[in-house]
Structure formats: structure tokens, C-alpha cells
Length: 274
Image 1 (cartoon, rainbow, N blue to C red):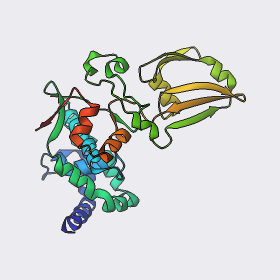
Image 2: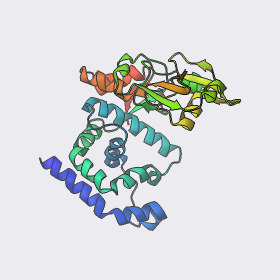
Image 3: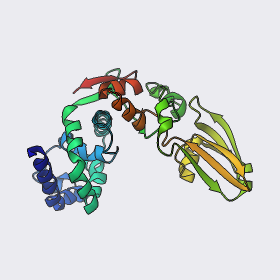
Image 4: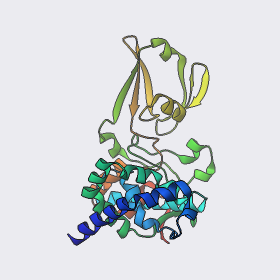
């Protein structure tokens, strides 16, 4: 109960300090004479809150927290400012409904950050980009193949069959023009059944470019002509690379720890303490 009250008071304190925070975001740290280098652990729960559903098991939220911490530290080491990283969480907290939801669920995210404090994933003793999606086709993707660089060889495909049980795993989008279907030619797929390259209207593009252009849930899709319309049938949610949040949540429900979940999805990485 005391921890919950402390959480509420902390949130109210953040809201009362919003003018100071906005001044910092707009004018930079030089405008704030009391500025001190930020402790990302204090803000990490708010960031993770926006990345994964609060209804997920705690161990899965912990796994996402370790991913987020690793990505944030890597971005800051590469020159991204803390104010840039915090802009979206602060914008979210500025809405009353967001604050209301946070007061009821934020304690789980605080605990996830506290229980994993300082933990990051590394590859050959270096922090690396850690992508995540909501649900794959049943297997994650090969990073080197998708991103055309051996530098992403640490992202190896792993089985995640439980993803096929995700809500709306299969989804359809219809286009009214059958001619459009005739103009699209799928040229290649990867081992997880995602489209790698296609030709649309004479233009060569990647499956991910096509997904973003049409707002598709994933680039794992097939094309069919149905009653004069083009049906795009998609599997999964997101790019399918790295960590599957749905798959990780199923593993957590089976009793797996956050370390075991991350070991499954990132078998070439090590869990380290900084």
C-alpha cells in the first residue's frame, strides 16, 4: 500500500513539474540550472508502459524492460539526447486518460524496472539494437537476411509457434480493384514466410516498404482475387524480428523467467549487469 501511494505521489510530482520538463524539452538542459544527468531507471517504467500491454505477465514485462534499457543506453551512447527519448512518454502523460490508466497499472512497471535494474543484453560484450514485435508467423526472422548485413547476425530465427494463437493473428484487407492484384508480383520470401521483395505497378520494393505503404499488420501476406476484389491476407503483427511479445507472454505463463524468455529469442546474446 505504501509503495502504491508513493507511486501516485511520484506521478503527481511529475505532473506538477510539467512546466519545468517542457522548458527542458523546448530549450535544452542549459535552460535548467538545476539539471543533473538523468537516471534512466526512474523513467524506464513510463517508456516500457507504452511498449507492452500491462496485462502481460510480470516476467514478460521484465523482458521488455531489459530490451528497452539496452536500446535506450545504446541510443544515448550514439548521441541521442534524453529529452528526445522522453518526448513520447511525456506527451502521453499529458493526456488525462493516460495518467488515469498509469495510476492503476504503473506499479507493475516500476517493479519490473527495479527487479532488473542495470541489466542489459550484449553481443560480444557490446550493446546492440534489440527489435521486438507483437506476434510472428510462428518463427522470428533472420536479421542478416532482412537487413542485408552480417552485423545483424545475432538476430537468428527461432521458433515461436504459440504466436499463431494470438488475437487477430490472421487478418484481411480488401482492395476494390482486381487490376491492382494483377500488378503485384511477389518475388521472394524468407524462411519465416515474410515477403522480402515484390514488384508493384512496375516498382521494385521490399515487403516492409509495401507493408508500411498500405498499413498492413505484417509483411507475411498472400494475395488473392475474390469477387473482383484483391484480398491481402496477413499473418502476425509487426516486422517479425527479434522478440515476440505474445510468444514471450505465453512462455511467462508457463513459468519461464525473463532471463529464460530472452535466452529463447536472443540465443546469441548475454544478459549482463552494468
